[in-house]
Structures are given as C-alpha cells and as structure tokens.
Image (cartoon, rainbow, N blue to C red; front, side):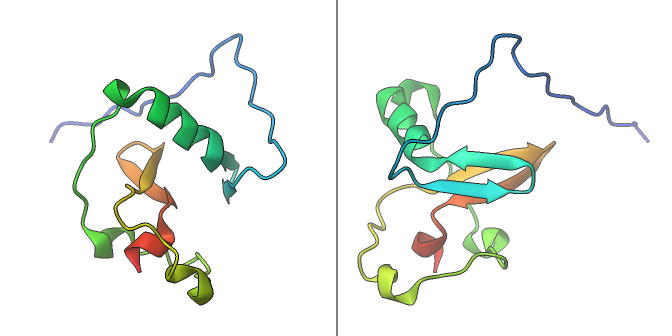
Length: 101
C-alpha cells in the first residue's frame, strides 16, 4: 500500500490579506475568512484561470449553513458555486448554499 504524502501550504512571503470593505460578503470557516465579493471579482476578471466543474449536490450539502428562506426566490441559479480546498482533497462549499437548496 502506497503511503500518501501530506501537502503543506506555505503563505507567500509578501502576502498581505485583502481588507474587508463595507458591504463585502464574507464567509468564515474555522481559521479561514473568505471575502466572497473579492473572490467573485477576481474570478470574473480572470476566467482563464478557472475551470468550471460539475459537482454532486448532495455531497456538498452544508449542514452548518443557515438558509434564509426569504432570499431563495432572488437567487440566480445560473451562477456557479465556489468550493475551497481547505485540506488535501477536501473541499468545502463557501459560496452558493442557496443555489444548492
């Protein structure tokens, strides 16, 4: 049986976290704080760096997310969801919970 190697992520030496602007949508997940607004801006400005993938909706059912039922009617279902790899081969849904409901 082949032993898997753990991957470690080292921050860039000159990395400066983006400031959260008033009105930005953010998502906290453990030690991580994701600025969804800035991520979407970056994705839209750099589409060649991202490859859309099909996912299994039940696999990403987010039990700790609180769904605002009144918001569901205004959701744009054609927008993709955003997954973040928070551990090797482990992805968490960080944007799009309402689109999966």
